[in-house]
Amino acid sequence: MAYERQGETPLDYMPCRYGMSKLLFRGPRRSLSGRYAAFLGGTETYGKFIARPFPSLIETRTGVKCINFGWPNAGIDAFLHDPDVLSAAAGARAVVLQVPPAQNMSNRFYRVHPRRNDRFVEASPMLRAIFNEVDFTEFHFTRHMLSRLRDQSLDRFALVRDELQAAWLARMRLLIERINAPVVLLWLSAHEMRRDAGMPDLIEDPAFVTRGMIKALMPMVRSVVDATASAEAMRAGAQGMVHSDFEATVASELLGPQVHQETAARLGPVIEELVNA
Image (cartoon, rainbow, N blue to C red; front, top):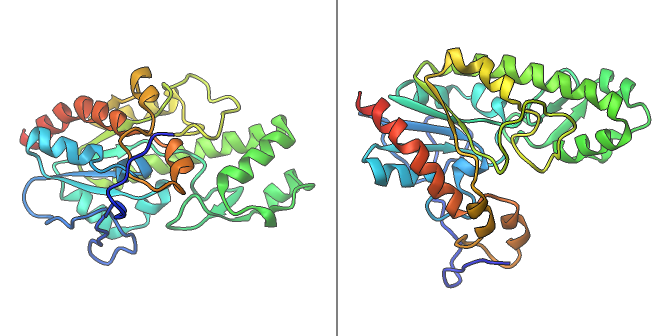
């Protein structure tokens, strides 16, 4: 496993808040005055174990002030219900919205934590009736719970998948409307957009999201940037990440620094044009 240390000092994310938001974003804290681009997304946008995530790289490449509102494992709900983040986004000349997975949000079948959207809170009576043989008290994370349901019955799991896709599309439309600024959708993943989510490998994010779902949002956004990781970047893996031995397994499951470099190269010109228009 490839990893790097910086002596005995862990990576300093310089956590900071904006307004009264309960979310701690990656710092340093930036001024919300003047022209800037806002980046809303999950673990990749935040840059877990990455010394310089793609928003920082884009700022260096373009000179555009890039404010990172990434939040590890964020789903749509974390941003949709945070008025301070939405206010900051509305003041931006461009907002990059990393396409989130569909499993990390509350829906008719289950409820997630309002900020830590990957945390499973409880199943609805409807889901308990569909999977009456499953003990939902043993689950703490959405991925674990959904993997168990998929293994239990593909036919019944299809009902859950369809609900997640429908809820994701409705919630994304609402979020884009509330951002009230030019939005660039960012597909950042180890796999390309697929026509059919099928019964996905839930390790691959954004899980359940299809090409058709992205296409349905295109009339509402300024552009869609496909930053699917190249084979070369995936082979580089965790090389260049900053983490301890204990964190090596977690780091190996994330997109590495070379993917961030590729993303900045693809996204940078789009952001520069929007902000400086």
